[in-house]
Length: 434
Image (cartoon, rainbow, N blue to C red; front, top):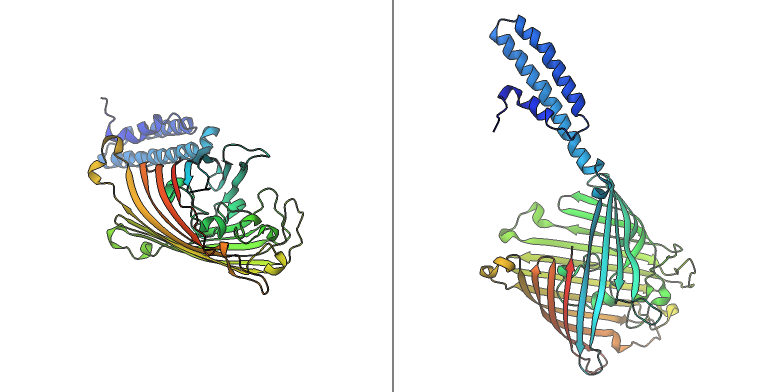
């Protein structure tokens, strides 16, 4: 191997960075410096002066090398091929559901989601997700094709950044983080179906950032809900507007997330996140600006946490919703909806098995208890529908073939205030993200 002399290594570094657009300028300038320095060195018969000239030459060429390197890195990040600016990803899940009695037994390609991101500059980025549910979209099917997210981030600083477009309403855990490997169980929690109606997107403008390394926030002004879609058992779920939501009565929503172990490190590599979120907005909104004439408001307060220590995971969510004007809405809509759940999991896959094809595998058993009531408090003169007052136990296992590919199985026992025996459910599924 040819070794470049120590005094000429910086110059050689510039010469061989041929991919940079600064190479010709750097090479000519370096050669000029050498040509000017050589006579001076020849006329000077003292070793000290010669050494100083060489040191000055090395500093000059070294500075050029650093500039060339910085420009090359910048080009690689934002000035390279247009295809390098794209980020592709997605997630999906397929389920097999079985139930007692009249409960349906079915196979469901529940959802396929394609993510496309694009980096315009180092501070402007696009994020988008398109979702297909239940494999087929037609007038006779329950399938749906929709834009779940489509927003631009303008990254100004750590504390203050701007977000514009269709975002995930920042309430609870699952609505913001619902890729199959990120939660336990085949289906999403019942609370996240009728109390916090996942997936719930809103269109608007807002801010996000980190107030400190341990405190993050989101705050948006967004399109509101259609109160005419509320009912006794599905709560506010039917109020989501997925096409062109009205801006007649917009909403304000936001959340805070506190990570205490960032400031105060904990033993065993523990992770703790404490979250609080809120929503307030009017309900006289419809699709394509055709408002339903609903005189009412919705307020949501929610708290959630995630805690991981050693081989154990814990999480929980609480949500309270108050609906002003519930009596005028009708459809059995409650004045107050309340729900919560607690979940615990233990990672049981032995470390000794993590070899070969199973080197990145893991397994966890979990249990979750939910208590939720979409008829918690009714308007005066309106009778409660006991079918809205429900509890559910879910017990199951997640087997991670890799961290981004999971096979799931669970058993669900449900109950409501009607006194009827709700069918138990057995679910199997597989999910992924990339």
